[in-house]
Image 1 (cartoon, rainbow, N blue to C red):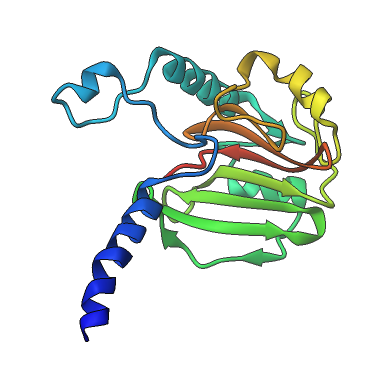
Image 2: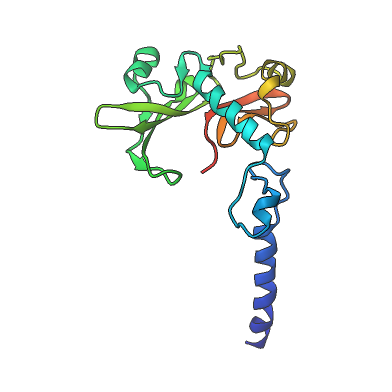
Length: 196
C-alpha cells in the first residue's frame, strides 16, 4: 500500500507532463498574444493567424474536388456522383452542435460530411478524398500529385507554421485545405474545418 501511495504522485506528474507537453511541431495550436497573457485568460489570434484564417475561409468558398464544393446540396452531389455506397445516421457535431451526416463513395475515394439544415436541406461541410479518387482541385492537384506542384499551386495561402514535408495546410485548421503526403506524393486532400 505504501508503494502505491508513493507511485501516485509520480503517476500524476507523468500524466501532467504528457498532457501539457506536445512533441509535434505546433500543428493546430493557437498562438497567445501578449494581451492574452496579461490577465485575460482567453486565447487570441495573432495578425498572422487572422490572415491565414481569412485566406483559408476564402479558399473553402472557392475550392473544389472535381465539381464537389463546400455548401453543395445533397441532391446536386447525387446528380454528380450517383448514389452513395454508405450513409451514416445523422448525429450531433461535438464542434458546434449542428446535425451532421457522413456520406461515403468508397469506390471513388470520396468521403463527405453534410450539415443537415432541415428535413429537406443537406449541404457539404467537409470533403475528404483518398485513393482511388481521380478528382482534382480547382488548381489541378489530385491524389498522387507531387509536393512541389502543391507548393507552387497554393503558395500564397500555405501556412508555414502548420506545414512541413508531410503536410501542407492552405489556410488554418479552422478553415482551408490540407494535403497529406507519403513519399512526396499527395495521399489525402481535405477541404473544410479540421479543428473542433
